[in-house]
Image (cartoon, rainbow, N blue to C red):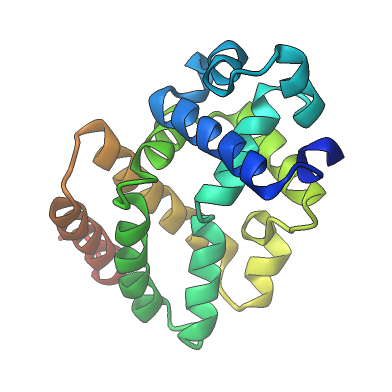
Length: 194
């Protein structure tokens, strides 16, 4: 969670910092990003950066929280809106995901997250998320069980969807190709693979 000094900045200065973070993390995956480049872009000292953020990771998580949508929470939201109809929810989910990941301003943030995210980042992301006063309900077996869908089934579906999103970035699929493949995968989930 950014430090109070960050939130006490005038809105235009905070926005300038957000813009520098967007630029850095749209230009580099987390493992290649640097505080040096961010502070040079902002024309501030390293010390100033550390008055706002604990470390580079916290600045990364801050921009992810601001700029991206948690797709797991989005799926649960769609599922609830569709009265827990899994088939209908999966169809709507594909359209919503395609709009999110192919948004020009956020495409690279999603790309780097799906291609370079690892288990350690995931654990620290969950901690960061909780510090923001949010719950990572999509990670909770109890949450999934409470909505009446088998947890293992959801994990299987999640793995399939993560795979198609990752392939989208690895193979540079267009939005149309993503939707064709997504719908094909969902059809296999629902009707089975011949």
